[in-house]
Length: 431
Image (cartoon, rainbow, N blue to C red):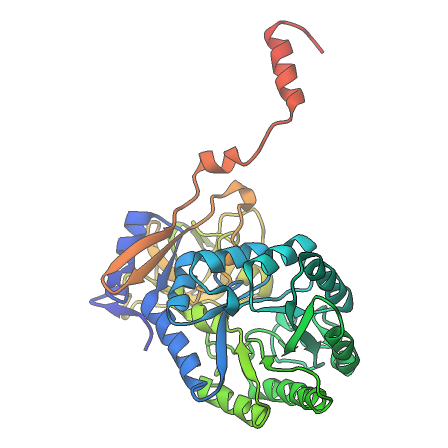
């Protein structure tokens, strides 16, 4: 059951009316449900019961400290892709040993920080990165725990911009080169080979790509262990899809069965990196209608949220449900384009969407916005970064205040020559 539902005609999250948050915090504002976050985590982790498994929340989906802390308190680790995300995970209470550092472009400074922090695993994605990490670790007198990320050349049925396991994608090392590179890595000073990693993409709604990728990495793992090489962990990444509209993704239990079939007899700890699955349907974006523009053959509903607040529709043509905060039972539905105020034709949340009548001032909720929403928000068009709130039962709190104009302007610095010219003008000196 969704944490978001109509009660007495008002769209509610847990025991809080969303209209109350909209009025008290303003719009646009993200709202996250603690109950939904907990339920998703327990569903995923519970399906892995009986396995030696570590669930590491992928911070790229939603790095808000309150969200990360919610999962940390449930025992989760963190999958990170930058020093900033590592710092966020630590600040939220994630144990360093449960932090995985992924990504194709780690800098030496980030490697040094992660080593000093004592993170549990570096997912290394290329030979140059491996050699750089070995040098950084050796200089510090440390050994970096490494999982070699291999690319299994598996095509997942998802948007091409979030597929990561095909041979022409930038991620990982071709699986047929995995064994020789693993052997070489195991002999490098400063490197402690822990295992293998794989990740084939996001929003995957079929088990077949997972099965193909997991079988390939299992074969490689068995071959490496047969050689006597150290291999105690396999990182299977994330990617399990969610329902935005009418998708029917596999259940965590069905996914876990594929994992069990693959890992039988391997004797390895398994690491998972869910992100979207845990947060997407636990969050919404509240917005207010500014204007309704009626043209001869089109109705435009202009709202105060924009593509800088939620980029997924502009980036991926992604679908998000849209609901009025006041239930419109029996109201006629007519097509409308829901658009934002940014000066881009692509600033559109829905096209030809069947919606009830909406007037200026009406409040709406853009659904399934808990993943890659606030995480991707920007200040394009000099718009303020969006506010974020979290609900827990009958309580809610602002977990990231809306940016102020003073704070936004304070980020810029005028170079010294402007000050010199101002001084000269004040003295009446030209040029």
